[in-house]
Length: 180
Ligand code: ATP
Ligand code: MG
Image 1 (cartoon, rainbow, N blue to C red):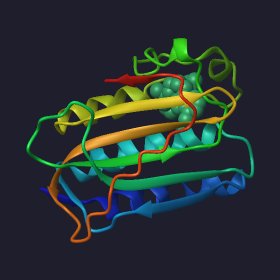
Image 2 (cartoon, rainbow, N blue to C red; image 1 turned 180 degrees about the vertical axis):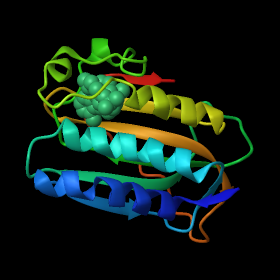
Image 3 (spheres, helix red, strand yellow; image 1 turned 60 degrees about the horizontal axis):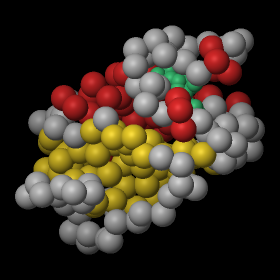
């Protein structure tokens, strides 16, 4: 079924707003509107919710979490269909380069996270990756310790916004990109 990307983000924000408010974290969305992808709306909302939830959980109080939608062409891609990129950017603790390729594994948590009082299970990102791949897409991460992270969910576009802005490709730092 066609799913509105705007709706996915609004739903994900609705499901994380209370947690964000408790930490004084502002949720912002920007970029193109009116894009659609093909797939399961519940799974897609859960994927974005997991990314926004992580951004909140692994950031200090008073920071902001930005979700940016763009029409993007993955590096080296020769696919004919356009890709919708949903980038979730935080100003949080970041992830060390040598952990980047492990965080998508089931139950994997970085030590600092594992010892947190309020714990998760380490499944959130495995679910995001699974959902991305199931929808013909993928997920990438770019991060710098103590500066923040950007997780980008890439999905084949079903329909594009009428006003297709140029992809915004600025990134936090330059540690390493991991493609899943
Ligand atoms: P849950 O199953 O409740 O989501 P979790 O958040 O620990 O538990 P994942 O979402 O899979 O599990 O994330 C795995 C690990 O990756 C986290 O434990 C954390 O160490 C790290 N991580 C994920 N997102 C971020 C982020 N935005 N900033 C810093 N570290 C992150
Ligand atoms: Mg999580």
